[in-house]
Length: 269
Image (cartoon, rainbow, N blue to C red; front, side, top):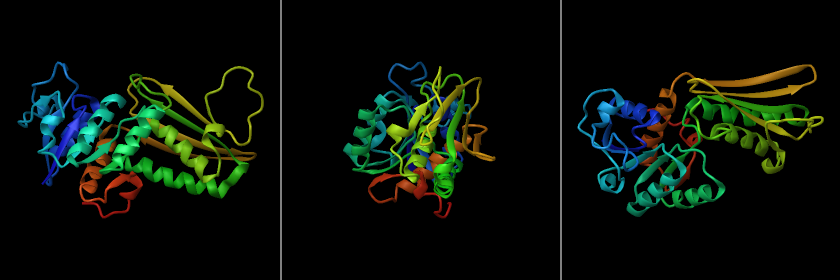
């Protein structure tokens, strides 16, 4: 059995992953962590997830469950993610990180620590999105510089970071495929008299509303035609499935920081 601990277990993603873990025949939930002082600490994680009692209480500290876990699935905020990663490194366990919104210093710290253990990190755990990234790289190289490229993402009104980590990842992957410097080519929205669109520019735009789980569209447009690649998430179950598959894969992976693309073509268990 693969023994799993989940951080951010009382959040929407945490509850969805809890449900998913209980449906696996080769996995066991051994730790459910939420930030200290959360009103549901002490409650049964299964009850919090809406699936009934599973005899795993929600706790406020990761340290207390790390020894009994093989892998930690992290969906929280940047600051606690960095703290939890340090703790995981100290006991040499595996980790799956789906947290987004890191600032440059936090991201550099995460990458440095994650390289010391077996870790999968991705701004979007959906397998469909990660296939989309590979497709976009191929399309960008094939179409070249003759096409204007715009990325539009739509999420629920409670999402705190914008643009989404996924949208940034998509745009950065396209820039790399075209040999462009993302820091120079990237633009976030437009306002006012901005003039004609520079040919090398890659636009990234954020829309927020309702309870939309997530939608990402990348538009390639030139004179006479346009091509759009769209991914829609209808529920968080897609992210949970990807995170669970990553957790299963990473426990036997080589040490180092891995991407979901490394998992895509492995035999699914």
